[in-house]
Image (tube, rainbow, N blue to C red; front, side, top):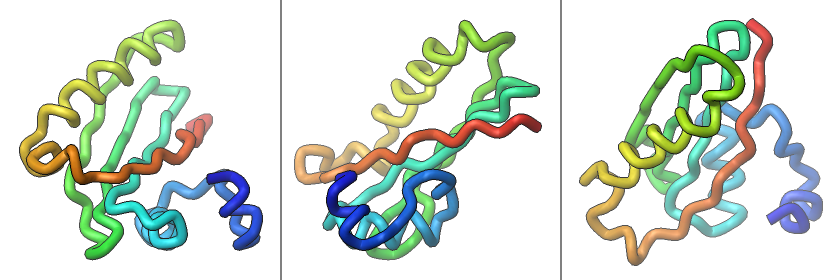
Length: 107
């Protein structure tokens, strides 16, 4: 993925917009992109799954945690909820999904 992005001269860092995810998803030839961010000040995790073909947000989820040490466990909770969502998992065997690194914001 990194080589493809470098060839296209795109920066992965900071790409949390739907438009950016769709553009990268098309280059990678995937159906869905998972994008999101973590707001450190409030320890809020926001994740969205975007359909690359339609640019529609298929699933959006948000969870807060008390401190930085709970971030990984909280992300796992969100992933469990998302993976069980019928809108996304109905034909999961046929899905190709690329995941962008989460951007951390100090807000």
